[in-house]
Length: 359
Ligand code: ADP
Ligand code: MG
Image 1 (cartoon, helix red, strand yellow):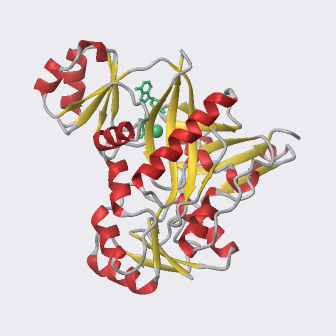
Image 2: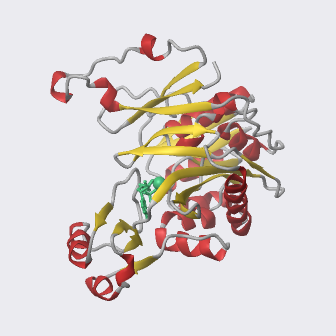
């Protein structure tokens, strides 16, 4: 079967690797023919995600469609839906593209979110509840890896941050006392069956995921509450595909949903080695009509992101140096994944390292 994939990054690359393993092919639509996914795709259509001609070509090439990229235009998925199923569909992807819509939806599914207010004008910041401060101001759309966010102590700082973000629609969110950050990845099939992955515990550095440890060091009760909440969110949306829900565990032990990603997620990369079925394979199974596989964890594991900074031990001006892969993979049970990006840049996700914790 040929799968049509919108987006050409590392998530797409790992999805293609899973598709090839299962004997399927993938046509990628991406502006960059040599991106991580384009390099190994069976076919690349070079174009913008909203280019009608490129979309028409993709519609012809494939019989089922998916995305690895959260900000794919919903209209593109709607167009493709006339030519074959899209997993996930446009309505679900749209819900995750706007933090205000997303939070309202998560609440409607009966899952708690941080106290927040919609900010469309300076006036909204003058009149919002005082209890929200200190707060985080986030652009409602297009933020990722901590970009488009500012921590603000009071109204004046919030107004300043809002203006410096170009006065685009924002959400002002109470800054919560986080004990831990966890995520739950769930695969939901068109037939309604679900497979929930073990809970991952995430550590962010500078707004970017640094490590994921699985299983998360939380009690069983909290883990099952988180897995149930993620299932409820997926079910309420009628979601089909792989979905990640990020949660905060607060100092008092309560659980708050932060955001969701309608695609395989960085915090699920460990599943390639450590689960019976990886998050990428689940996505391919869903696209090709196979039953979901088991998400059982084979061994405890840590995934560490390898950012471009690693290539510049002496600073960017001194030039790019290849990291010491031998040292990094010394420990038995280490698996290195590089995404094929030629140019390292600070903060750029270049690869990841998965390490078994039981050897
Ligand atoms: P992104 O889309 O950039 O991942 P997030 O909303 O997940 O945006 O925020 C990035 C990180 O900022 C979170 O992983 C968390 O560490 C911190 N953060 C976000 N919102 C809050 C909050 N309401 N209270 C405390 N920390 C937060
Ligand atoms: Mg996040």
